[in-house]
Amino acid sequence: MKKLEDYVRSIPDFPEPGIIFRDVTSILQDADGLHLAIVGLLRALRNVEYDVIVGPESRGFIFGVPVAYEAHKSFVPVRKKGKLPCETVSAEYDLEYGSAVIEMHKDAIKPGQKVVIIDDLIATGGTIEAIIGLVEQLGGEVVKICFVMELAGLKGREKLSGYEIESLITYEGK
Image (cartoon, rainbow, N blue to C red):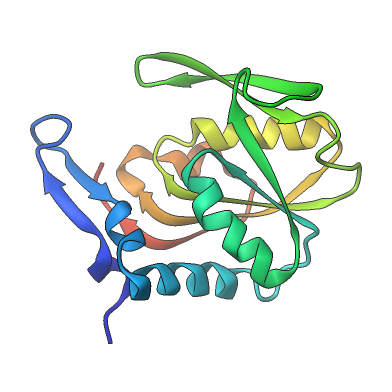
């Protein structure tokens, strides 16, 4: 039987020389790969007490919603600025070149709720750090953060120290 990492396509020298791009879409394109990813995330949460799953667009939706569905939990989307129709809270965070703003509905997390964050990849950790800030601003408690893949060389885990983090696949490089 194949392992989850067997479904990840690695593309050398993209987007620049010396970088190996880890393509999550190749997991999605194979029913067995997608199944392994969702089962792996569910397994990572089997002993965690939580109320809601939060995921950033777009790949946090792709992996977070099936986990929420199977665990019978609610799902809260985090979107780019201007995409949500009701009153929101927002956070700005740094990108490699510039910055971005994410938003969450102001009523999405209730005070005291235990929150799991799910995304496809942790690189520098900036997006997830911003999401943690939003969850905590609304009174939620982040109890675990799960990723399909981790690029350990970018040290995103360090930015999120103090939170329980689990990655299904870890790549040592960038």
